[in-house]
Length: 287
Ligand code: HPA
Image 1 (cartoon, helix red, strand yellow):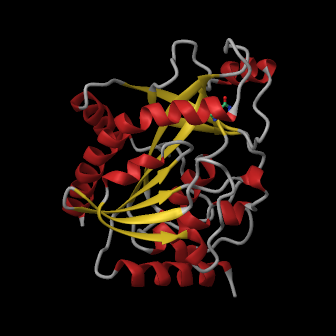
Image 2: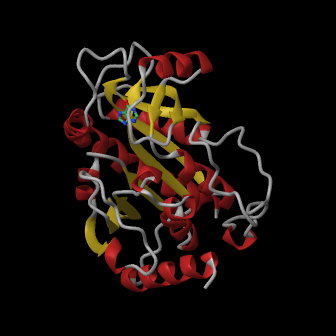
């Protein structure tokens, strides 16, 4: 079975579970941010274990299930928990769920993550919308034969494609408005992805700052690349869970990352819920 066939099989399995629901907006939840899924109504839950070929999350704080339903009256599909390269998954496995979202007809995704703050002005708990990324994972998920059938739009699915606006400017503007309406501010930053699992050294953080990064994390970038390959519009939102190595008063730990995520997830839920409705309206008006 080819990778494309495996994705198609997983998508068909999920669509059968979803019934007539056809979400145009997808949400991926990062470490400690799972509660955002609790604002989904008429929810259908599908464990990653049930879905053919779907990778299983092994990290604490990543539940590993699809939550499909509505936010307001808007259909939405939420991936509660993601898999990472550092867990031992291949790039193809790491991006499998994003491919499935594409195969289901999703046209825009909100990718959330926990990140370390490289910019000294960032405080733990702050939300930052991604304006761009730097891929320091050492690999690209699209290496290998190109598969144009993954295209969701005309002019997508290309071997070489533009990444100038990897993160949609108009979705970022909506995110700022949604945050404002929730009574919070959302910054803007550049996310640098490393493979992990070790946190960075202070020297690495200084180097990354010189390169132009304001956030560091171990996810999101592969998903963004694959989403853009399919022509899916991307909004990235980082939750700064800690100051990056060398800026932090205490050693970094997964507990700190996880606990800060838990404190922020309520605020993030409000923002995401508004955004899903607005983005779906925008996408549907263009159909
Ligand atoms: N570094 C890398 N990934 C992270 C961090 C960090 O400091 N915090 C949360 N995810």
